[in-house]
Every structure is written in structure tokens, then in C-alpha cells.
Image (tube, rainbow, N blue to C red; front, top):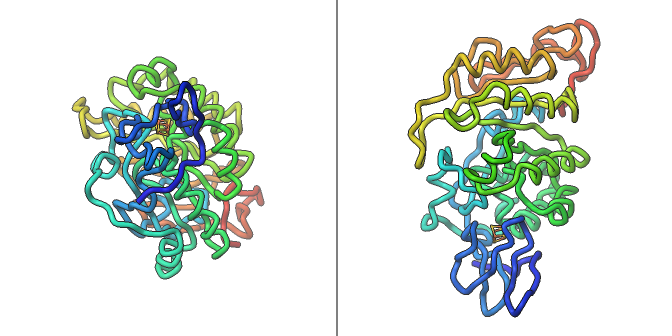
Length: 330
Ligand code: SF4
């Protein structure tokens, strides 16, 4: 199923996709970098409109979002295609599976989400921004139905389309995959600066949390991670940062991230950011809990996907009254 593309231009009789900085020339076959955009009857189109390859009702902590309705469920969908090339992709079975999908119209999607009882829809698993037109249509209908929209994204898109979509989005988890321009360019096939600028834009519209998968041999460099942390703090010391452990996957076989590296990074980051969490590693060590930024009391106790709001009263720490920087049902 296809839908006319919203962002393109014409140069020397060729159609160029203007959705992300790859600026692909669109052709009759899906040869674009993300493999979901091309020409249908000569018109620039999204080729995968409504083609859903994965649906689940997940804990919101799985996105991960720890400060947006903690403990709630989220109706989550994924399609295929991506505009980055992470050799260690942890969701490659979804992002690269071009054969296993069913068509779900935006109206049907919203009905399914409402039936699930979850208060939010997450566009996730692979890269949602390459299915832009579908998300744009779904997000508007979802808002009308009283649902929240969540994007779990690499943040690699031109600012114009991003700015048009953001007013319909309530929360984002954006990957900050590295803090090294060369890594973004040579390994991930994208640009760090674009992602940083989009993070800066997104915080003006929605709740934003960041995730960095610490990958052995790519970004497990303490000085690079500390620079990333300082940049986040320069934006907002209350910005949530998830630092997660990588496991060998897809085309990348280096050993899993050293747990002690993640723990050391957590200690550093927690000294300058109020809310840091470790992911994909053992729980129960307190590194998934939320702490009061003022007095340090545990506000949310997490063990796996078990979430207990323990010391919150009307969105504030019940010990010192400091506000907890989160979107909560109060
Ligand atoms: S969205 Fe896809 S087709 Fe468009 S420029 Fe980016 S990678 Fe190319």
C-alpha cells in the first residue's frame, strides 16, 4: 500500500526525497536508502503506508520512557525500513523484514489501541520517521481519540518535516548513538549534528528522553560518553538519559558491553544529571530507580518491569516537596 510523499523536490527531471538528509533520488524500485520510498505511477510515495510488521502492548518502560506515565502500558507498532545502518541493530528482525506485514489503516490502528486500553500509541521497533506520512495521519486521529503519541526514533530527519509532526507528539525517546561525528558518518551513515539539533527542537514540543546503547568497540569510550553527558546537561540537567548495554546482534559480533563500564558511566552521569538509568542489564541495583533531584529519596522503585511509585505526592517528593520532573497521573 502506498501514499503520496509529503516532502520531495525535483532536480534535473529527478525526484529527490526531502524527508531526511540522505536526499535519495526516488526511482520505480525501492532503491532509496531506507527502502520504503520510491515512485508509484511517477509520483514520489511512501511504499509501506500502513504496512505493520509488529504489534504489541508493552510496558512503557520498555521503550524506554521512565518519566512519562510510569507503570502504564503502550500500544506499540513497528514497520520496516530504516535510514541508518547500525551494524549491531538490536531490532533487525523487524527493521529489515520486508516480507512479513499486514495493512492497518490509521483509523483501524486507533481503534485497536483504544480496545487495548493503553493510553498511548508508540511508533517504535524500527525507525518510524521513514513512515512519516502514516505516522502523521495516525497521530492526528490518535490525539482526537484522546491517546498520547510516542516516537522512539533515531532523530535523523530534516527539521521542516520534524517541526510539522512534533505538535502531534507527546513524548519521544531519541537515540544519541554516539558523540563522535566520525562514528555517525562512517558507521551509522548519518550526521551527529542533525540529531543534536533535532533533540534541541523536540524538547520545545514534547517530553524527551535520550538513550545511548553503549556498543563495544564503537562508543565504549569514557571521555566520549562524558562529553555526551555534559552536552545533555548543558541542555537540561533534568533530561532523562538511558545508558544501555549492547549484545551481539545482526552483523556485529563483538562481546557484550562491559557491565563495569556502564556502572562507572552511571556514577559519572548521575553526578551531573538528575535522572540516569541503566538498561539491558541486571536490575535491583538501584540504577533503574528514580531519585528526588533535591534530597535523593527513592521516588519510583523499579525491578525489571515492576514499577512502584513509592514517595510521590501530587507529583512531588513526599519528603522534601521537590517537584519530580515527569508526566504523571496525579
Ligand atoms: S527518508 Fe528514506 S528516501 Fe527519504 S532521504 Fe531519507 S533515506 Fe532517502
